[in-house]
Length: 160
Image 1 (cartoon, rainbow, N blue to C red):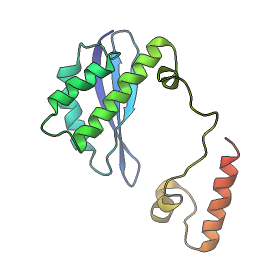
Image 2: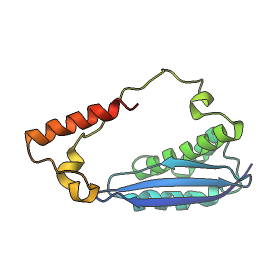
Image 3: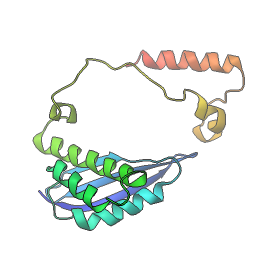
């Protein structure tokens, strides 16, 4: 199996961009990675673009070897956007390996460690405070709105 293409996708989420990377192979298997960095996706995109010639033609299933090659090629700037780019690519390689084996990524790393995961909503409601118009959700302007949001979260958690 060989890497044939690496594509990046910058998705406008309204208040901040999200960055995804897709690694494609000659066997039709592809992997996805997420590598967002606040409001500055173009730096990550540039690192991935620079790493593309290093990775094309290589086997993504050997993800430890690929990671070492990426580290060597970013040795002057191992942190910041370079680290985010490497993380996204590494996730895509691991995704490909699991798909090629017909197992989940969790199985690839020894199986699940729990039967269920508690819901955690990072910054619960903070996006609605600033961007309710973009999200198409009711704004949060009062304690009553916060209470209503709490009921919504509790109701949604019961769906899991």
